[in-house]
Length: 215
Figure 1 (cartoon, rainbow, N blue to C red):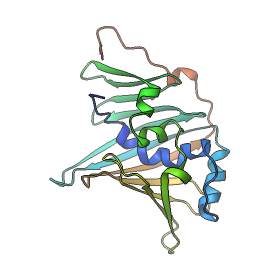
Figure 2 (spheres, rainbow, N blue to C red):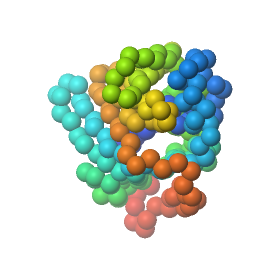
Figure 3 (tube, rainbow, N blue to C red):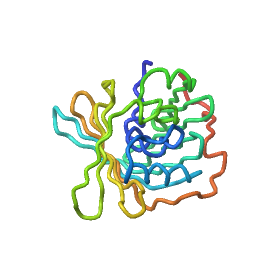
């Protein structure tokens, strides 16, 4: 796949929790099992996000913010509003990545995206965390959060480790920190998470505007 999805790196860690509900229950008991059951009960959600992308070599960072929408069984809308608009939509059959300022949209078949990497399988709920990842729960007491580390059984350049921060009372995701092969980090924090909102089907559809180059 010639173009690297900029939005994908923001969704990787989030999907590790949200879309695990489509697989079998995780082997671990306790907090991980409770998180699993919580997200199995969710049909849809929406949340604001802030995202910090840091390049390991230069230590330069970029802050991004936007909205994330999900509807079972794997429809995703990841919409970045700053510092520049970007839209990622994962539909039933097609994945769109649209860059408004560049007037360009990339179109992929879902099966091609899912076949390219384990990370992308997670995005549409096709991965099973109990089979694809080693999980480690940090039970140390801190300021009201539990950390869960995910390590792919077969690491790949786009994801070698993810650390998920979870509210120990509600078992809902608060933050994700993902690390790629080069040490680049991607930290995504959710704000104002709403469970089971009534999301319009049009949120997960996309038609390229007139004049936009489609690749």
